Every structure is written in structure tokens, then in C-alpha cells.
Image (cartoon, rainbow, N blue to C red; front, top):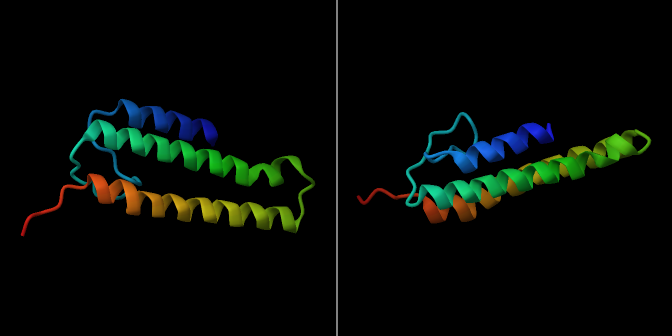
Length: 100
């Protein structure tokens, strides 16, 4: 799974158009596509590293209910942190707002 995220990170960095946060979202208009995509790539890489770190208890330690619970909580926290970082910092700074 980490390799998939790593390939996706490279794709984001090389993309000439702004990428969506998740695949089903509408792509927003941004002020600087290159900077926006670099931040999105960094966010995707950070998410994948957090995902791997959350799964370490299940992969390398005796698997029990506690280890699985820690992994699920870690992945949930990683996902929530990723959404919060995107919403509060990346989208807020780079989105072009309509002037009404």
C-alpha cells in the first residue's frame, strides 16, 4: 500500500493541473498549481508514512485485539489529521474564491 501512495505522490508532483483531495471531489481552482501540488504531494506522503507507522503493531508484533485497536485508532487519527491539514491550510490558502 505504501508503494501505491508513493507512486501517487510522484504523480501529484508531476501533474500540470491541480489535483483533487480525494478522487471523488471536485477539483478546486487554485492560484499557483505548482505550489499547491507540491503541498498535496507532501500531504499524501505524510499520510502514507502515518499509515505505515500505525500498522507496525499489527505487522511485527504478536497480533492481538490491543494491537489491532491501536492500528485502527492510529489510521483514524492519521486520516482525520490529513483532512484537517488540507482544509485549514492548503485549501484555505490556495483556493480562488468567487467574488460575489
